[in-house]
Each structure stands twice: as C-alpha cells, then as structure tokens.
Image 1 (tube, one colour):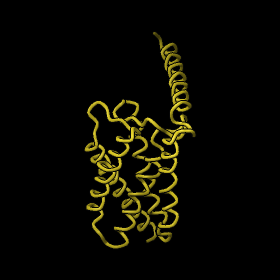
Image 2: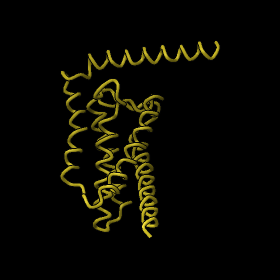
Image 3: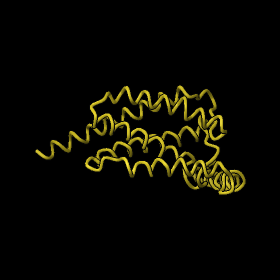
Image 4: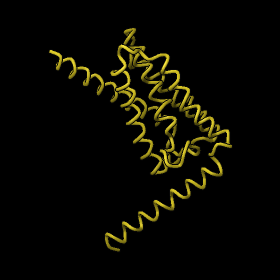
Length: 188
C-alpha cells in the first residue's frame, strides 16, 4: 500500500470512528441521560466556583498555572484514551475530547485553588498537592469508575492517575515559577 492509499484508509477510519462516537453519544450520552448532566455539572460547577474564589490580583499567574495543568492533562488523557488505557464512557459532545469536563475544569480548578491557597498562606504546596492528588485519584476517579463513567484498562489504575497528577502539577508549578522569574527579571 502506498502513501496515498494508506492516508485515505486513515481518513476513512477517522470518519467511521467519529460516526461511531456520534451514534454512541446519541444513544447513551446525550441530553436525555443523567450521565450527560453529571458530566456537564462537572464542567460548570468548578468554573462557577472559580469566578467567586480566584485572587484577582494574581489572576494571570494563577490562571497560567491552571491552564498548564489543563493542557498537560488534556493531551495526556487524549493519548491514554487513544491507546485504550483510560476510557471515558460519557462525554459532552462527540466532537470534544472525552474528558473535557475533568481536564478543562475539575482538575485545573482544584489544583489552581490549592496553588492559590498555598502561595497566599505560605503553606507547603507539595504536601497539599499530594493530598489533593490522592483525593482525585482514589476518591473522584474511583467514584467515576463506580458510576460507570470511566473504565481502566490494560493495567491502568488509580495509583497511576495519582502519579500522573503529581507529575503534571509539579511541572505546572515549575513552569509557572519560571514564568514569574522571567517576568520579574524583565521588570528590572
């Protein structure tokens, strides 16, 4: 099979896959199912909470940190989903990444509020991050699994989610610190 034939096969399979996602969503994950409304609330409630709790004096720094968590988790979740390790069975829309509610809202908002709290009150960010990661991995993900919203496959489990949370949040922390250092040096 040459380059063009291989590429056409890939495009056809992508179209078929999207059609299968759309069909699944129409049957099991649409507006008429409680799972859709739970997924939607997991997207909206953390964002509403954020509006009332964010430190507006440091909004750029805090949102940069949260955005970094969001981007890293979103790409990693897409990769885990494509490889079949971590499957989200219910999602907002078939055209969006399956875990948009979690990677764009729940995780970034949770971690950025911990970042804000720890940096405002001189608390140990790493300790609080470990605690929140444990809550997300062993509490939240376990609840999602119990409700049938997610499925772990091929050896993936809550402990790996815990480790992934830590790696992502620590990277986001150090990238944010680097950004602040660059900003402070530029002001000199």
